[in-house]
Image 1 (cartoon, helix red, strand yellow):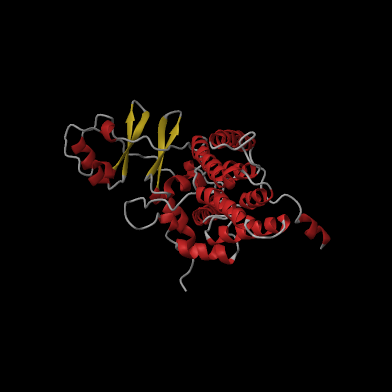
Image 2 (cartoon, rainbow, N blue to C red):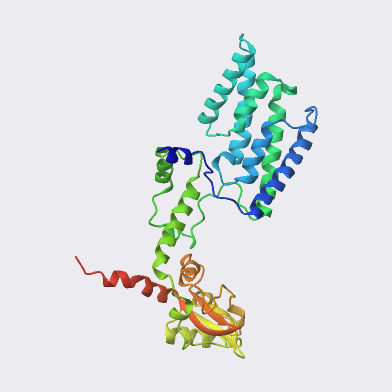
Amino acid sequence: MLSVFLRGFGPAVPRPKLSEALRAAFGAALGLGVAALACRMVGLPGPGLIAPFGASAFLVFAVPNSPLAQPWSVVAGNGLAAVAALVAGFLPLPLLAQALIAVALAVAVMAAARAMHPPGGAVALLLALSPLPHGGLVPVLVGSSALVAAGLVWNRATGRVYPLRQSPPAPHGTADPSPARRHLPPPGALADLLARLRLGANIGVEDLARLITAAEAEAAIRPLAGLTAAHLMSRDLVTVTPDTPLPRLAAEFITHRFKTLPVVAEGQYRGLVNEHALTGQTEPGLTAADLAEAGETASPDTPAGALVTLLADGGQQAVPVLAEGHLVGLVTRSDLIALLARPLAATPAA
């Protein structure tokens, strides 16, 4: 019992990669520098910063996926906290009582506005104890906005999505979600789940959906351990050359009822022509080279689980398998469906 209790005081998050830690560190410094310049422009004394901005910078640059780090939470949360401190300052109470009320009021109004931002508590306490020029509201809003602006640029420039991911657009221009997400509860149900588990401040609805999808995909590919592209690929391939004209391409698709045709020249792989690329094309001068797409490729020893990931999102119908640039096989969605369906086919009917 004691060991279980003590483990609760240990680290609760995975160790980040060094590159991610450095990305966040440099970003936080950059963001605070931008905020300092912005704050000096509105007359904030000293270095132009207030201490709570350090905590806001940590959230924006180190955990940009957190709901607590989103632009509305940062700007509205800090701004409402500043207003709470101003209101508390008008109360005919001792300074300590004003500070306590400022923090309590800040938490309440941030929650009501769905703008929960932990540094906002520090903003309220600081302004209640040490009033700033303009009552603190203008510097807080300017500095918070500058941090968010810097976060937008830095996070996106270094490969992170900020603001928080929203539901991705439907892949086929319809109202249906992607195939991998059609079994998931709707966003409203996921939001209710987070509220029941009291996790709404820790993870957003979209990231929860991504997490569920990734976990289920990981579970699904575990039975494929040991299988590679070499086990699944078709080897007797129908290919076309770069100069194959449009009418001939159409005839090949009709004859073989394929969804894709690899393009090969002098033994080297040159791309993949998808059947949908022919839709609406009427120019007979078009060739396979004009319609071919590069797409993702694999090697014979690529794990089957990686192929599932490549083919599951709707972007590719097939994955060419290359060995030293030569096309040696092709793994299609039909190959994977047949593989994944084997346990279902082996299950006796009830």
